[in-house]
Length: 235
Image (tube, rainbow, N blue to C red):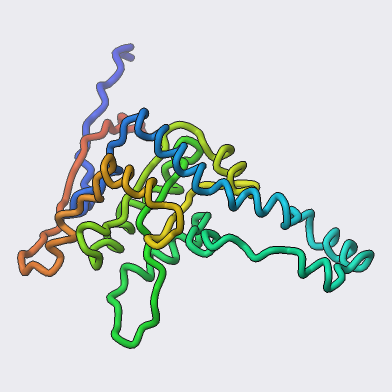
């Protein structure tokens, strides 16, 4: 029997590809990312201060029920708690709420529709996440911005350095993966001005030409892979 190993055969494997281009994240220098993070933390600081002073952190349903039975706040104590800052209603935190609003923004508006929430900036702590958790943001933001004027297109900021803990500290919540700010958020003018200067809007040429009559054919790609040698049948 020969000791020479049979060379692996090559096989061409076909796969379907999209005719549309992939939407990339905006390219932002680390220096500008640090400046944006500072401005964002300054904006969110009052929300964390309010939560620390007037909102008790949750210790579970059982502990909350027991605490409510032991001591219920009197009307006078409840009256001393000031209302939440106006900024609280203009900032969304977390994957689910931001994704839900982007889905609503991507839909055409009707004349009878009530005023909807409109984002101007979305910040994502990419340094603390797997790409699987945030790869949808560029596409969804491009779809949501197509109904907005050019000067109001949503800006997407991805922080390459881990900053989730700092954002959590500023907001007074356990975990922060992403933050969205609306265009009428009080105190966000300086942040919006700087972000608009250094962060380019999401570029999606194929989405802008979606109404074009040009046919976009399916792309069939292929790659070569090595196939192992056939095993001899034993009798």
